Length: 508
Ligand code: NAD
Image (cartoon, rainbow, N blue to C red; front, top):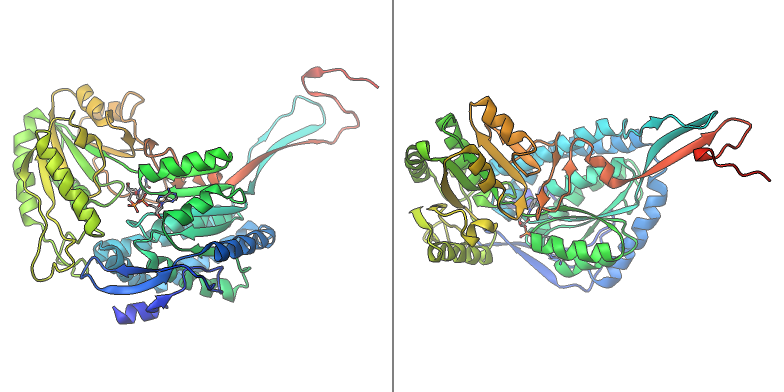
């Protein structure tokens, strides 16, 4: 790991505030980053204080004046070079993500690949950013709309995707002409430092103004400064619904914009027409991958009564094969939870589930002994539940899977929708009628609805996000770029008269 840290420019003690090439002094406390993999202290990062925050803001405002003048395709070329730099550092950054966050090395690499993919997407976008033209009711007039950058975009991100979520936002925001201030999770602060070091090389080589890419570090407090700050037109926040509600209320109080990507409670409907073997892989990966710490993790299986027992048996068998251990060892399927606090939350959820009448068919528990010294490794578990239990309606960010029975497809869709969250959903079926009903307006109420793939993970080409308590935001592909721009409608009169709209007469 030493070599990896060196390659990424991570020191034992790191500044946590940066405007690009400059790392700013701060009087903030050092946040220590312990690996959930083995409990070691990887390094520490100094939190941003109010003074250095102000310096970042001033630098960002100045940089925006310059950066917005760069033609979008030229900004796109910078993002293209960032993609290349990430390709070159993919193995190192993937390893750091795995070691600091605890996901498997393969998933760490996958996360960096997502960053590369969004760079490619943003490069193409930099030659588009289309507006519409429309016909004017007035002779000799032309109407069209165009999209301008907003200014400063602040990005608040969660621990579970410590690098990709930033890139989804930053790459689009940059090609749109904005400057960014990123506060990563205090649980994975070194990943942010590594990303800033990687892109800074590209920025320096291309004389990108200081202040286009800014890093601040710290806890919720620093996120609150950004939520309150009227100089920030858009706050893009990814994390828990609790955090989203706080950020939304504060930003709305100053009529700013938010882009919210919050918790999920994702279900797979397993029909009697499902390809059961394929379903098993999708369900197990969805439930145990990243130790159940994806916003799209599968938390509920809604299974047709006629295949319930067969599927349950296969599920128990499959859970018996899961190898839990160091995520950098590619033989293991499941790594640790992020920290001991997450372990407590997992244990409490199991207890609550039992209290509410749930019956565990695969038992959970904390694993100890050699190789598990960090105290963060837990057993993925499965409980048979009634869908009305309150614990089933909450997102427990851990590998706890709830299974339940249904009789009709309409009932299954009702169960799937009857939770406060609305991120990802799936149906496993070879029956066209069922699949289309699930995708129709009477079907899934989620932002993501899949057929014959699980709930977990997404490609960057589609808009990503969810409804209800998931926050309603859309990031990444499709036309999500519009979130980072302001729309302007323009009417141009090339005639010699000044007719008013709606035929209003006004003579002087
Ligand atoms: P969290 O809400 O504890 O923290 C997320 C970020 O918000 C951190 O940077 C934190 O410092 C900051 N924060 C917390 N309270 C804040 C406040 N009041 N004001 C401003 N900033 C604040 O979440 P977490 O434990 O890091 O991540 C797990 C959660 O994130 C899960 O609920 C998961 O579903 C969600 N998530 C959602 C998506 C998505 O795209 N929908 C993606 C990843 C994670």
